[in-house]
Image (cartoon, rainbow, N blue to C red; front, top):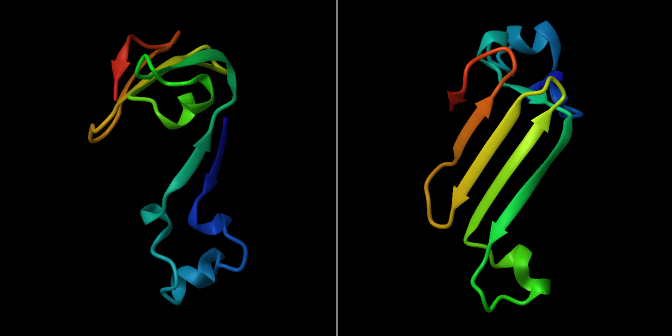
Length: 101
């Protein structure tokens, strides 16, 4: 797992305490972090209309499903339906009970 501050990741952007002191960035606790996980395995499935040619599958799906195994053994399941607002994410962690986010 790798964590970094999103706002401070951009080259040329003000960083450090001086940027907070001048008001160019909000207080550090108000900033966002990006957290990258290494995917060790898994699959993703695209549901498409039956008549969709193979070379058009990536551009014409109506449902996206993924099951990804992360570096710590957690399995993340992601489902996105065409036209939906938001995404359904559940995960099974070796350290915790099944969770939904």
